[in-house]
Image (cartoon, rainbow, N blue to C red):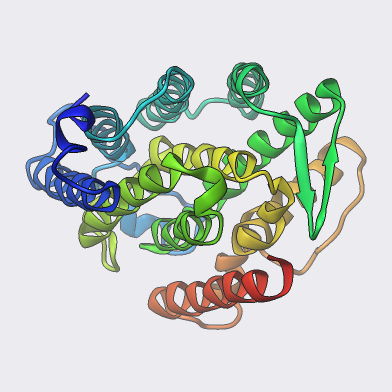
Amino acid sequence: MLHFLLSPILSEGQVIILASLIAFLLTFLMLKRPFPFLPRDHGRAYAINGALSKGKLRGVGLVLTAAYAVISVLILHSTVEYLIYCVLIILIMLSGYFDDAAETPWSDYKKGFIDLVISIATMVTFLMNDSPEIHILSRSITLPAPVYFILGIILIWTAINVTNCSDGVDGLCGTITICVILSYALIFKDSIREYAGYSCVMAAVIGAYLLFNTSPSSMLMGDAGSRTFGFFIALLAMKSGHPLSFLILSLVFIIDGGLGLVKVFLLRFLKIAIFKNTRFPLHDQLRKVNGWSDTQVVVRLTIIQILLAVAFYFFFV
């Protein structure tokens, strides 16, 4: 909206910087005076230091998503396709928020069904506006639309859930998400175009949140935030034309949260037990068994994610 007023007097980069600064400030002010209806965390007995979260504001991902959606649509260039994605971002956030606010956590099957519906809507929108062409190293392959449709659903569902599972250490999920989305914005800026600007706004929103979420935190994003971040990362991976880049650029999320999902799936449905002596998410193993502090977990995993992004750029782009 305002993009049409700002573009004649500011460059595209300046508009993105302005939008990011406003998003940071808006998010900070909204978190400084949080909404009174936000739920409180009940503590998680199964998680390392889970009891320390009891009583903290939870579900502030609602605030983060609201700030992001308002600023990205109001200031940056928005297409009809993006507006649909923005609605879907809000829906995936709400699915997490209502779970955060529920007295009894939603079942995995209920959340999985919601993820499936939103993934299908996303892929229908994507294939109506984008090519099913993917890039692997120097090669380009155009997949049949039904094949890309199914693989895209798998990618979105995976991204939502591995990111969600990694949200258990103050500052971890937010910091790694910033690394991932800015990696896409820098490495694939030519192919994702306006989504590089959206990434900067999202990073600014998360940055404001981290002011309150670094250890020891005063509030938690909850599923409302982590599920939204996972969806956004999947969207960037597909818009980049390099969806397989997700395997490297989100590798910390995949190892930290994804291996736990594999462990649970194999045990629940195939009665196959793997990683018997390893706790998941992996950050619990690092804290409980290896004795890492919360700060060490965040800093060390962030460094690994940055190195992965640098390696991806030099070896695969």
